[in-house]
Image (cartoon, rainbow, N blue to C red; front, side, top):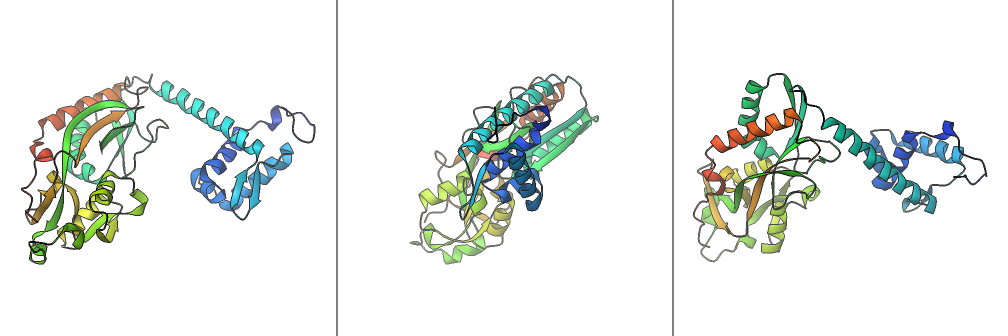
Length: 313
């Protein structure tokens, strides 16, 4: 490949960090996004980009009112960088999958309410069985990338897990619309759910299934408060701030909460324990999976699918 000045690239010009820079600007749709991806200051990103373009004699991004848009060369380099990045990730993940030690670290990802209710007894039992293995737990409403090894194992509630992961379905979680009993006096015989104040999901997690249910089933609902955490939403419903979708087994932990509506055939998610195919033969992953299934099978999960009798509206 020749640059626009006619000079040939040599080995001294080759730097994977330059390609990562182009990829980050492309994926982040500008310098601010690249700064978040690479954890570098905005000015550092700009300086490195200008240096790279000057050294190679090419323009990779148009600077304009709409931000940084890749040129034809920039688009091509971005695609090549993405392919290289994926190959590097695949190589390291497959290499990690050959690690047969019963030591090291397992990175786990889950949501806040599953961490609080179901994961803690698993972690306690696993530490007793395998004290030499360290556990790192990431709690987020968003699926971490197991392909990029942001996590090794996921405990998630989902209608359908990502196709590139393997694992086991543990139980089915039923959901309903719940309110604190103190609000029942405000609910008359002809009061519809859309006329009540709702506790909803933050826009940052608008993709979550419960938010999609609300938008589909109650499109005119008055959402007065939003959370990016189910535990936060649970607390707001308990405080009488409004109604919201909650898992039955979580809502049943507070006898003051009343199920206003439930649709067992529609408002359900499956509970999954997942990992990446390249990692499932790691001894520490197999050991954790066995332990998690043992503990979760021993727990009384009857309340996972059990529901309160809905209140007639």
